[in-house]
Length: 464
Image 1 (cartoon, helix red, strand yellow):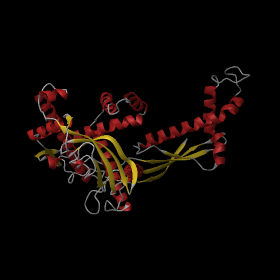
Image 2 (cartoon, rainbow, N blue to C red):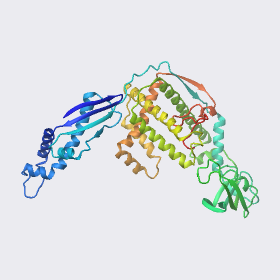
Image 3 (cartoon, rainbow, N blue to C red):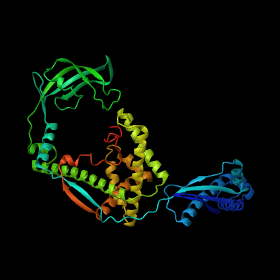
Image 4 (tube, rainbow, N blue to C red):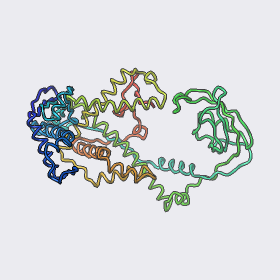
């Protein structure tokens, strides 16, 4: 086997591999010799099949294995001899000339093929001691806990049938049929639907028009679907609903006490408050972590500039762009709605893909230098959490991940990333900054790397 480098340009490498006919002949004979004692052919005892007959029967199929093994061997040799770190799997190109391939399959001619590679870029890790990031902190107030308790109480309080007209806060049981331009539309009818007046869970204007009605009343409700309604074919359209009120229900007394806590599986109201406070704090901590990480990644991105493997960037871009198109289609949005064009959006999202690839390579190298590992137990625990998201399908989901190494790698990757982020945060200056809840959850200054800005300065969303 002769291996010659034919291209070294940036991160691209190409090698020419030549397998002489004599070597192909030798490899074929060796493989045939290995299987001669195992084959069973009529008229011959095991191990006594003449080599020429064995070759006639099995030569082509064995040669296919020979060539595959040779390709694998060539790839290993190229990587090991040149100490390469690959960005993706080697791309092998065989000659298009069928006659050349036929001769090689019969070991009567040399076989030359090319191996195209993209290697990972080499770069030095920068000193991060001067990097500073802000960690927003929000204290959980008693008001937050009280408001959560009140929401829980409202959502779970009983309603009782009442006589007379409905009022704001009541619940009405209705049948309705909706029409657009006089024609009924899919999903526009319902029976025995409970509508809590003032909850703002229905189309704007729908609930308000049901106030003042009593059981047995009918009402023609006129509304317009919001411009950003999730069903694109209904967005912005005017509709009429023939509504029949079947029952009016008044809310029961709002009780926040130990009995309510027990309905939620807690020992007492104090225990329920404690659980709520912990849950709110976890939400705050999660959002704070997201902002710290975003701040840190921004700092890292500003400190690195190196050539990126084109194939990795293209793969990342296609993954991002396919999601963008799917989201925009499902939400009935256009690029004009986002104050941009498809061409500009592609350019923006390609920059996002480049950022992701660059940061991924940086984090990978930091993790490697820091000897960060993810244990099998950590992966298993994360997989268990993933499986729990699919009640009733736990076994199928578990087996899917166990049988698909690539899918399991997608479980391991974010665990690795978070550990690397923790490692970096231990090296930089982290300053805590007390902020309001509104500031913590305000995304104007914390755009994710999945949404570029439109020309007007707002986020060009992926179809919201």
